[in-house]
Image 1 (cartoon, one colour):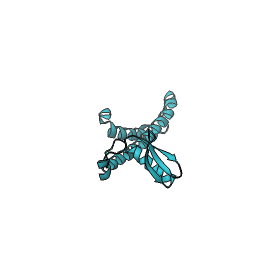
Image 2: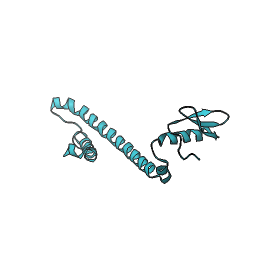
Image 3: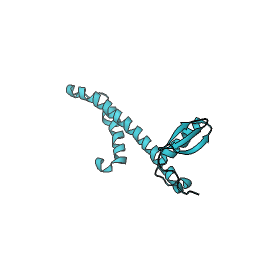
Image 4: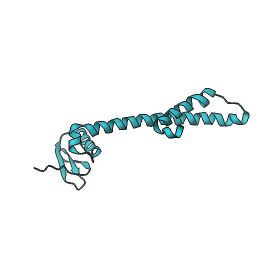
Length: 129
């Protein structure tokens, strides 16, 4: 019995049933009854490239990787929101500086900078110090 799995990425091939082939065209899994199952199998296989089978069996790296990914997506969304607020604030601030008047003081001087500073403190503490 071979104890090593096929290395590399997989692709879906359709015959009478779906199958997953490696990059050289060798069949790795066959008899997959639905395209949805074939897609899921190939997506999981390809996403786990570089993670040992033992780690997958225990789930540690997969759970940790998913948690990191979810946290990064949340941070990305917060950064986009904060940058949007900063640009909105600056767009309103710049024309008003010419007139010596700051409209929407709350947005320009409080809301946007507070959100931006909080994100910087979390991701780059030395920058805000």
